[in-house]
Image (cartoon, rainbow, N blue to C red; front, side, top):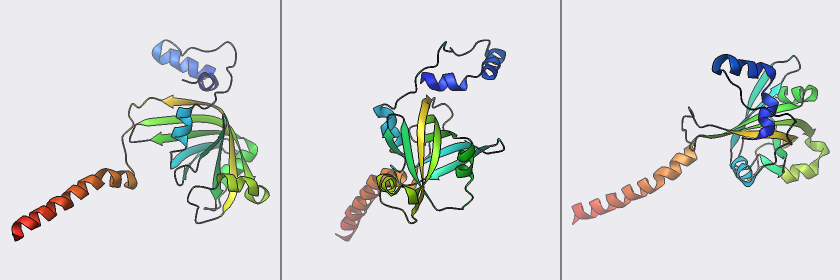
Length: 202
């Protein structure tokens, strides 16, 4: 468990709720821990995701949760405490971009349903105009390209992260994951069908 993550989210109200329901609280820290750098495990996990959820806070104080998707590796680890991803043209509502202009706090939620793993990330983000940063566009454009051009670049300075327990995560599989799993079965079925046809025709 990353110390800085828990130090950030264990507010007095949270600790009071823990005392109320469980009669105890998680350990707290006398001094603020340092920001947590990614290890190889986090880097591999992050850059193998094809989607994640990102929460921002709107100008009038409401949480806003958005799903982001792309090819595996579209969310890039660009430093020990830094993430970037390319933002393409969408519904043009600009809720996340506008919210970050007022409050730069974000929470990312990354899921691996087959292995029942999840990674939570706290950070400070900014959205850069891609027209003003062509060098960054080349650096972080998604693997395999994208149908629409990059309009913005999200840069996230990571404060901390935490791995959550797998309890109650229902395993789910993408179409590609299912296809890879059943491919040997289909090949075996085809092989047996050929053998059966040969026997019945002889």
